[in-house]
Length: 93
Image (cartoon, rainbow, N blue to C red; front, side, top):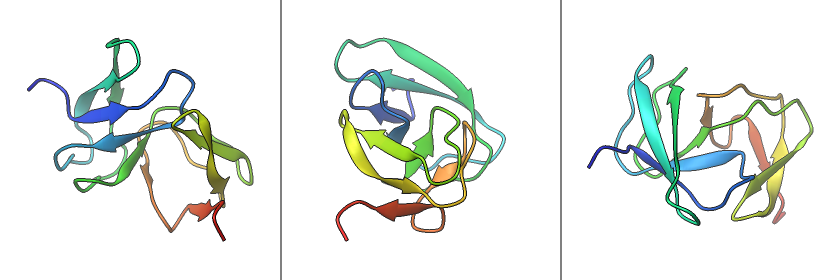
């Protein structure tokens, strides 16, 4: 396997780690809708199953995954950041 995260659709702001990602590591992700790839530098460590930002998202902006809004960026984050409850407020509640 040469990728470390998956992105569901083009236009998403985040991908999901399929292995642990180390801070400072250059990692490849695969878009599941068309098999294209993207490489980014991880700003933070990202545990398996957690989200990694593939785009800069300003504070209080919508965060897109699966092609839909999953929440709001509470303080904003940059490409390569670990995205989780510390910087993402769920759209579910």
